[in-house]
Length: 242
Image (cartoon, rainbow, N blue to C red; front, side, top):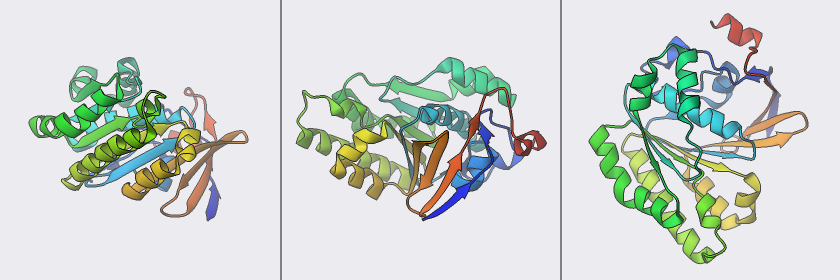
């Protein structure tokens, strides 16, 4: 496994012209984009994170998906993490029309595991077809299936149904993002890790390290150390991109 130490990067993303028209949704954070690449149409990407950075990235990617692809985003929220105010702040930083972008992000929030399965397995395809969405986001997919009231055998089969449906929809052209927050949960269930890691086309793993984040791409056997800086600061690379 190769390890690269990259320059510190802020999550104050920088709008970049190469976002447009390439069928890839990027983070607009140069350090990450040069390493990760972004969400690809026709592929399913998993972000498996032990750090709350996953929520920042999800919001940025949603805004950029609308801007880059010119199509709606359908966001199924399994972790109560959609923040419209954060989406609005990102729009302002990027100089985008806030109302237009927010109107293009369709959110469905689940409150139980069974609701989440229903949204993904029974209703998601119709919503994608109805809106012509180019990006699908399912945040915190495994969270609700960790309920002690559910048998693990049932939870696993339900998650498998969701993952297979999302994989199928991605093969029809959507850029699909699935996130997990809380790396230890997924590692405790080897069968779940095998399912998610074995199905996703691209995997981004984010772990807390000493004073920084370790970001790895398991499919490529590549790792980088990412030193985040406050929102009101930028790196030289990001400053020059303005």
